[in-house]
Image 1 (cartoon, rainbow, N blue to C red):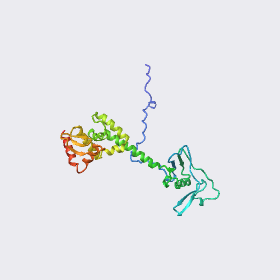
Image 2 (image 1 turned 30 degrees about the vertical axis):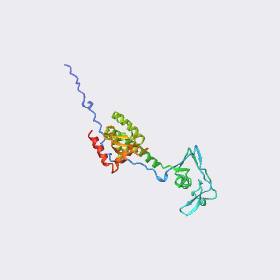
Image 3 (image 1 turned 180 degrees about the horizontal axis):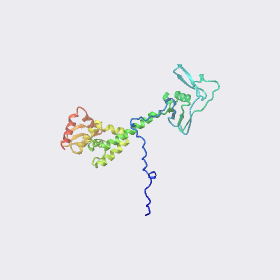
Image 4 (image 1 turned 90 degrees about the vertical axis):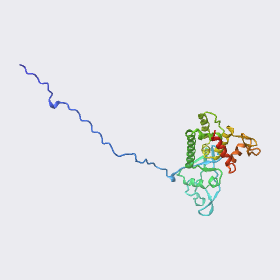
Length: 280
C-alpha cells in the first residue's frame, strides 16, 4: 500500500502570535500644582507715552528754547536742554558740540523708548508737563488706565448681575425711584432697569443701600394705594386730608416728604405709613 504523506507543519515553521508592545510607564507625578511662570516687564526698560492735553492736531512741536527750571539737587535754576548725543539734560553739563533735535508729537502722542532715558527725563522735568503745572502734555499712565477700565467693566458686570439675580421685590424700590412704570410685567421692569444699570453702573449699585431711595419708594407706594396724597402744597393723609408736611413754593412734594420721613421728627409718620402698607 502506498504511504500517506504527513500534512503536519514542522514546529520550526509554526507561526507564533506576536507579543503585545510594551507601553511606556505612565507618570504618577501630578502637574496640577505646577505654577505657570511669566516674564514680567522690567520697570527700568519701559517705553513711556506722552499725550497732548488739548488740540495738538496731526503734528505738534514742543517748545525747547530757553527752558529753565529749578533743580532740587543743586538748589539752583538751570537751563533744561535736550540733545540726543548727550547723557545730561542740563545745558551746563553738556559738551560744546551738541546736536539738537526737535521733539514732535504726532496725532497728539509721543512714544519715547527706554533707550532714550535723557529724553524721558527731559519731558519729566519740562514746565509744560501737567505734572509740573503745565497745560500742554502729560504722561499716559498705562497701568492706571488699565485699572480704571477694569473697575468700570467690573462695575458694569455687578450692576447687570443685580438686575438678573435680585427678586422683583428688591428691585421695585429702585425702579420706582427711577420713575420706571412698575405696573408692567416683571421682565419689562427688569429690561428698563438693565438700561439704567448699563448707563451708570456705580450710581445704580449705590441705590440699593441708599435710604433715600427706599423711603421715597415707600411714600410713592402709599400714594398709589391711596394712603397718602401729594398735593402741590404738601403731603397729606388721603382719608382725612390732614397735612403731614408742607411743601415750600417751587419745591417737589415727594422730595420734601422723603427728607421729612428720614428726619427724627418724621420717624413716627414713616412708621405709620409702613404699617398701613403692610396691612394691604
